Image 1: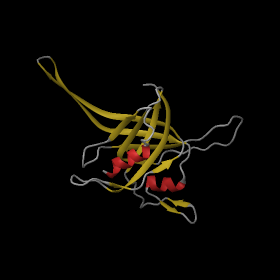
Image 2: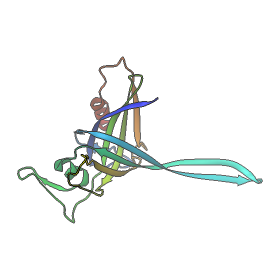
Image 3: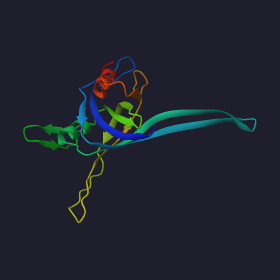
Length: 187
């Protein structure tokens, strides 16, 4: 289907990591306003078994996803959560120090297609790293500077899941991204 829209980016911090025996625990999903683009670059490993002078079998293994998001706004309070930094609400100041540890996150967003259907995407376990920041002065033409989030998303240990995609048809007006995302990360 031809995509015609992208919206409703939400993230949730993993507060307790998953193990082979237990599912992770996530905080409450929070919205980041102004998702502009998402790029998903899967890392795939392939191996081919040769014998009798020909290919006999092949293995294709999905290893991880490199994901880049562009958003219009990335408040300091959200940056602190996403990158594992300290944020003081009373002074509205974010601190970066050597003890910072980037947490695992889950995130979800919504894509629309030309038939009026919605696709919900959720990724369950990954870390975003701070990206290069460039600022420009105002010039003869106006330009917006977007915030980039680049991360690596892997499979969960407890259930082997990396992501989920849900198709919501145009007649379903009750299913929301937040309720679906919350149900996935609470399971």
